[in-house]
Amino acid sequence: MVSGASVGLNILLAVKQVPDVSELRLDPVTHSLLREGVPSVLNPYDRYALEAGLRLKEIHGGRLTVVSMGPPQARKALQESLALGADEAVLLTDRAFAAADTWATAYTLSVFAKTLPFNMVLTGLKAIDGETSQVGAELAEFLDIPHASYVRKIDLREDMQGVTIERQLENGYDVWELPLPCLLMVAKEFGQPRLATLQGYIRAKRQKIRILTAHDLEALGANSANFGLKGSPTFIPKVSPPPAKPPGTIWSGDPKDSVRKLVDALSREGFV
Ligand SMILES: Cc1cc2nc3c(=O)[nH]c(=O)nc-3n(C[C@H](O)[C@H](O)[C@H](O)COP(=O)(O)OP(=O)(O)OC[C@H]3O[C@@H](n4cnc5c(N)ncnc54)[C@H](O)[C@@H]3O)c2cc1C
Image 1 (cartoon, rainbow, N blue to C red):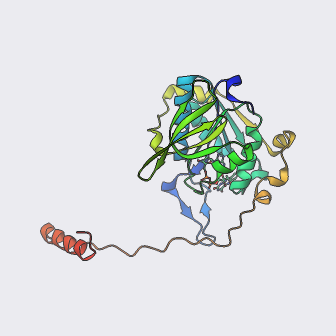
Image 2 (image 1 turned 120 degrees about the vertical axis):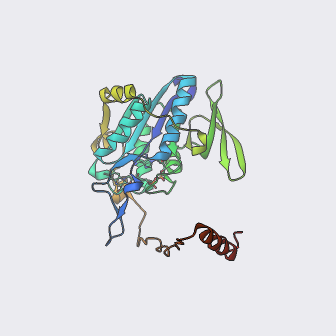
Image 3 (image 1 turned 60 degrees about the vertical axis):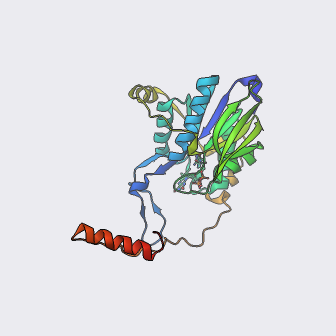
């Protein structure tokens, strides 16, 4: 890792491929997510981080590398990132990485990150499946750099040694200054992410996705005991689905009568 001034803007963006929530199903016995045959998409929160990286690159120049740790089909999320304008995509994939918790995921991503001359790391705020919001902060710890979450605006300092950011709060926003390199977890308030064009998809088809296995990361100095399930300290004793919602009430017949019943019900509950 080298500091900003010597390399220009060099952004690393971590993206996750997640199951399409509209098609989510639970295993009736184990209550775990059924992924087999479920279409996957680029994590929607990572689109905001990608948008942030692309806008920074458009203003300041530089390079945007996307990395994902996941099964081979995670290539699709990387291909979409390339179609949207990323310069390079890297997939960390190996059975040894499987069933990683957030700590093992962040460790594995950090081994690759340390091979790059990055001065900014971007992540989404959370993945819509695991939804822990831990990977960004843990990755920053492994890289020994400061981080900020809920980032809605990023201004790069002219000397490229730091950033001024805005962090979304419930009733306003914070302004923070961070030195580079740093890690920023981008919020959806950053702005509408762009859509990929047909030319983007055609260009992405021609771009190669670099594949790194556990063996490759070991050659870079990784400790394989920290990969996947065996490197994951998280233990999940039980998963319970939320209680089923009671059935709703349907009023049919005369619309005036139905509206009166609705207003009565709302006032009984104290809403009107
Ligand atoms: C072979 C294999 C199988 C896997 N199977 C599963 C699985 O079945 N279920 C599952 O949830 N995960 C799976 N993973 C991925 C890994 O275990 C999770 O990514 C990790 O636990 C992230 O937790 P989270 O979803 O709570 O992320 P969060 O902390 O909520 O994510 C925050 C941000 O961190 C970044 N991020 C998170 N995960 C990754 C990642 N994998 N790669 C790059 N960036 C990331 C994104 O920018 C994301 O927006 C698999 C990985 C491999 C290699």
